[in-house]
View (cartoon, rainbow, N blue to C red):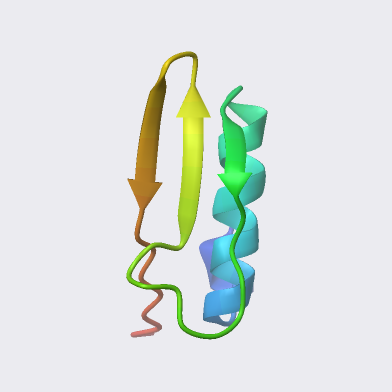
Amino acid sequence: MIDFTEISDGDGWEAFCRDYLIALGLVVEIPPARGPDGGMDLLVREQLERFSIILVHSRTI
């Protein structure tokens, strides 16, 4: 069971998503980085397809 309340900030959310996608078997070509990202947080690949992923973290509890 994942307790999402333990993810306190955007950096933690990006790290969680990266690790989760790797666990699902995707290859992370461009990992999360600090600073301007041009609207793309992760670039992942599954076989011959690439996916640009934008992540948003909002704490509303």
